[in-house]
Image (cartoon, rainbow, N blue to C red):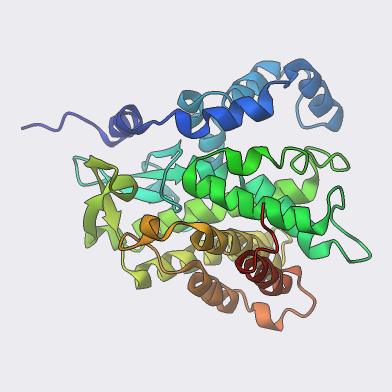
Amino acid sequence: MSNPFTDDEYLDYIYSVSVDNSYVSEYIRAYNENFDLEKEFAVLVAAGVYQPDEIEKFKAISLETYSLDKAFRGEFINTLKQMALMVVEDDREYLTSIPVGLLPSRELNACAIRTPSNGAVIILNQGVIGQLIYVCRFTLSFISWQSNTPFCRDASQGDYAKALIGLAKYVMTGDSKYIVRFKDVLQFPSLSDYEETTILFCQLMELFILLHEYGHVVKGHLNSASIRTAFDGELPELQEYSKSEQQEFEADQYAINQLIQKGVEGGLRQSDIALCAGLVMKFFELCEAVSPSDHTSGTRTHPPARDRWEKIKTHTSLESANGALALNLDPAFKVILDGMQHDEWAN
């Protein structure tokens, strides 16, 4: 029988059988009901982010915030893919044809789904990608709160810890009750919505996640991978490639190596790249800690985030980077995790 789908068409099929609007609709409604598109656009034009004649482009991107359908293959994911392909110069031709989509998922990590032609499409978890701005801002605010140059002190240090825990619970369950209560903490009134540190670090975090998946493709991990039902077993009609823990470490290293090569050329320090990968891994570690035991038991597809972070620190020579902000991630999250276990951050 002939194959009914091209790989690109199969990505659309995945959306049709897996979309779960209830997962994010309440969150979207709670935080965007007062969004003034024209006012926001004027702010961006004044900041030089957009030209005055680019309002239609801005509308298209903004609408993705409200629509899973538009976000799935919209401007954001296409831009992220193009950025990643610019990073992977040697492998660009090979990776260009791999379709990439954005969906809310019960699985923490991104994944590769097998297509009918035994190819692959990549699905990034919208529940994670959509929250990286808050992972970045909550963490940097918590780490630097007592320093002479804090990133932000709009809320208490304890509130930033609680908000991180609530964010992790939201990502793992899809239940917005865990994050709605921190609406005030989410505002960051003293920071611009387009503050440069946040934008840079979030882009690097997003790139790291996609480059990890590209690493599996480039390293040939999908050629010999076993198959499991997709999205933590919820969709038996979709087959997800399941890799070994060693292959997951190799994919992390591929992503880090690509970012270092391109980033250092652009003036970034290795410790900057370590920080962004570390923000992802320490948040994943927090997600694993708040996840109900029956959610992860027997279904883990990646090594523990803590183990992945230890290897990333080696790849980026972080331990020798005296004074690097990334060196504060471990002690900061130890405080948060210890406090969570002793109900210090109880919501």
